[in-house]
Structure formats: structure tokens, C-alpha cells
Image 1 (cartoon, one colour):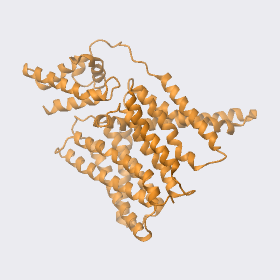
Image 2 (cartoon, helix red, strand yellow):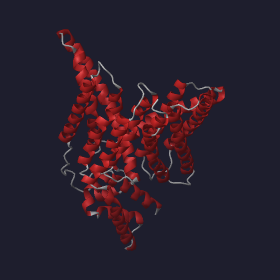
Image 3 (cartoon, one colour):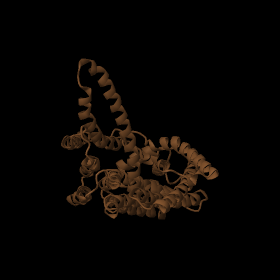
Image 4 (cartoon, one colour):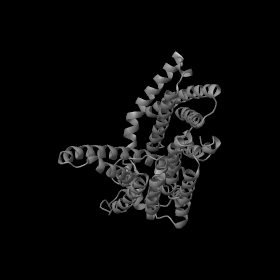
Length: 446
């Protein structure tokens, strides 16, 4: 029966990740599937056999079931479900819709750029409002793509409008630390707002939260690739048009901001489109980078602990380590989003535990150094933001390490570890929002 539960979990995750089914209906569909399995089991089939037949009988989910079987080609249900219809028509990939939203993001950013006089002038309000210019367009793209109702549009708009009012009405001191912290933290908080339309409004669904983690990782990869390609294109353009006397710098001042804004939507469209045609890239990337990061973290933790450098971190090194801890946590989450819940613990799960434990040791060292620095010099906006981030990371890493050990020892299921991470995700959004809304007035906008 435990194997059947794992199969149902995998089926649910796949159905939830499809645009064809609204997340609110998944529970009802799962109940229907379980009832089918129960009826078939009473008729004399084993639970596993009942699952295979029930998937085939799911009516409107036949297309999803075939796709599910196609991706899980090593499983027996492929033989029961993947019968015929190989040439079924594919849904439109929505490239024109994505192009319209990408163009809208580019135009909005160009208007803001001209109003700010960038790059001749570099007012701080532009940096603070960049995410408020682009991310609402991305949210609108998902609202349109998921065909959500007016209520969902309003619920999505409220956080953006509230953030715009807070950011632009606060009386920051020119060049203040709180001003910079807001510019860095606001995109993080608003990215979690984008999660609402991406998940189709199903904010309580753990599967959809993990799907958003997967989307975030792949979106970042595509965006970096687009940026690298754009940089090469601009360099070649400069080499070709420069001798003709064309002011390439002026062209770049217009093209690069538009490309950077439009690529936010284009990368999202690429992630959405490729889900239909190629394998998920998460398993490959995590298999490559997780061992490397685990080794580097383990070595760093040992070196700092043995040499005593852990108590003498300077400000720059603390910042680097914080970035490293965030990257490692993101890599672990991305790897979890790609893992099937049913297989037994493997070598990659053990390597991820090494990475988590090493990150936990480093985080404790960083926290010790921060507390000592605050005891000597007092609280500042930067120290408060960093201290809060490290406490949030510490709680997450402790929970992840504990559940990982239990999973490797066979005392817990992978599903519990996954649920811990998806349940904890809103804490990161809450802390980013706290940095934006609470810290500036707390420190008199200095």
C-alpha cells in the first residue's frame, strides 16, 4: 500500500503541475482516483494494479495521464495508458501572448528610464522601483495564461500597489542604508507575489509551491542564458557598426534596458513551453553542482572551525557567506523539486545532507560573528537585516537536516522533507517584506 501512496503522490504532483487542471480541483480528482482504486481492489485487483487501471479510467485526464506515462516511461502504467493518440494535437505555446507582455514590460521600463534620465542620471527611486515596473507585468502574464478571474487579479494587484505606496512615500535619507536594503529586498518579496498567479491561486498547495520552486530555478537559468546571448549580440553589433560611425553606446542605452525587462517574461514563457517537450533540467544541474557545493562548504566549515577564523569574519566575508548560504539552500530546494518521492534514499540525498549540515555549521559561525559585532557596535539597518536572514536560514537548515537524517534512516518519507520546505517558503517572503516595510521607519530612514 505504501508503494501505491507514492504513486498517487507522483500522479498528484504531475496533475497539479499541468495548466489543464485548476489547483482547486485536484483534491476532488484525487478523491475520485482513490475511490476508483478502492473499487478495483474490492473487485480482486492488488492496490498497484488498481492504481494503473484507475489512471486509465480518469476520463478527462486521459491526455494528462498519457503525458504522465510518457515522462515516467520506466513504469508499468505506460503500457496501460500510452495507447494511441501519439499524434494528438498540442496546445498552442502562446508565444504571441508572451511577446505582447514582454513588449509591455520593455516599454514601461523605457518610460521610467527616460523619466529618470538614466544613464546620465541615476536616481535612487529608479533602482527601488525596477521590480515594481517589471514584476507586475509578469504577474499579469500568468493571470492571463491561467485564465484567473477578476478576484485573483485584484488579490494580485493589492501587494504591488501597497509596495509602490510604501516604497515611494517613505522619506529616506539620500544614500541611506535602508534605501539600499529596500532596493535589494523588494524584488524578493514581490517574486513571492508572482507565485500566486503562477500557482493558479492555490496558495495552500504544497505541490504547487514546489512547482514554483522548480519554475524559479529554471527561470533564472533561462534569464542568465538570454543575458549572455544578449551581451554577445551587443558586442558583435559594436564591432560591426562601430567603424560605420554609429554611436553604439546610445543604441545600447535603449536596447539593453528593453531587453532586460522583456527577458523576464520571455524566460517565463520558455520555462512554460519547454515543460511540454523536453526533460526537466533540474536533475542534471543538481547532479552536477550539488556535490561541488557540498565539498566546498564542508572544506570551508572545517577550515574556519579548525583555524578559529569563524570568530573573526569581517563585513565583506559575512556578506559573501550569506550569499553562499542562500545559493546552497536554493540549490537544495531546486534538487528536491526534481526528485521523485517514491525512490529510496540514494547517494544524492546523502550529498545534499552534507551540504545542508555544512551550511548549518557556517551559519552558526556567521551568527556568532554577527552577535559579537552587534554587541560591540550596536544595531544598524544592515546588521539587523543580515541577522534576521541568518536566523531564518538557521531554522530552515535545522529542520532540513533533521528530516534528511530521518529520511536516510528510513524513519521518515521524502514527502515530509518536501512539505517542510514548502511550508517554510512564506517565511522568506515575510522577512523580505519586513525589511522593506518595518526596518526603514525603525531606523528613522537612515
